[in-house]
Image (tube, rainbow over all chains, first blue to last red; front, top):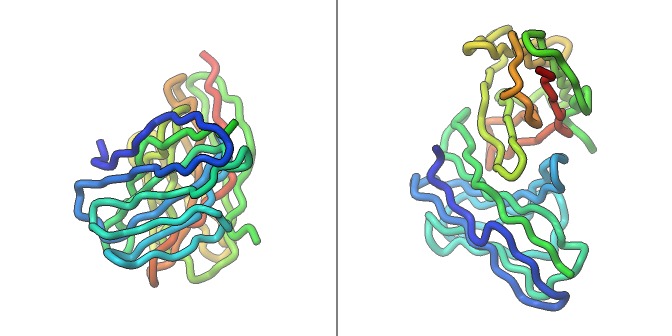
Length: 113
Length: 113
C-alpha cells in the first residue's frame, strides 16, 4: 500500500468558498503531481512539482494553485470554488529516476453547489 | 492533442476469457509504458510496466505486448476474473524532466461471472 494520503476524501461546499485539498506522502519522493479526473474518465495533469519550492502548471489549465514548502506536503488551493470545479482530484508522487513507480493517493471528491 | 490513444472504451468479457486493451502513442521519445488499474472510489494503482527494449513482459495473468515500430502496446489479462472488473489506463512518459505520465482515455472492463 502506497504511503500517500489525501484529505478530505469527500467535500461538498457552496460557490465562492476557498478550499484547500491536502496531500502528504511519507516516502520522501521528490516529484509530486495533481490530477483532475471525472469519475472513470481520463486523468488530466493540472500541477506538478520537481521538489521543494518548485511548482509547474500541467497540461490542463486550472484555476487552482499549489505550493511545495516541504517535501512531503503538496496542497492544492481553490480561492473561489465554482460548480465547474466539481470533480475528483488525485495526488501522486514518484521517486527521482527513470521508470520509478508513480503512486496515487485515494483522491478527494469535490462537489461545489 | 491526445498523445496516447486507448481502445476500446468499454469491454465485457466472460469469466475465464482473455481481456485485451490496446494503446497507441505518437511521441517516439516515450520510453516507459505503465498500465494502471483503478477501482471505483480509489486512486489508480500500477499493474505492470514495460520499457521499449523488450517486446513482452508477463506478471502472473497480466502481459504487456509492445510493438515499437508500430508505436503500439497492449494489455492482455488471461483467465479474466470478476475481481478484475475495473477501469484500466495505459500511460507513457519520457525519461527527461518531470517524467510526466500521459494517460490514455481509460477502458472500463467488466468480467461477467
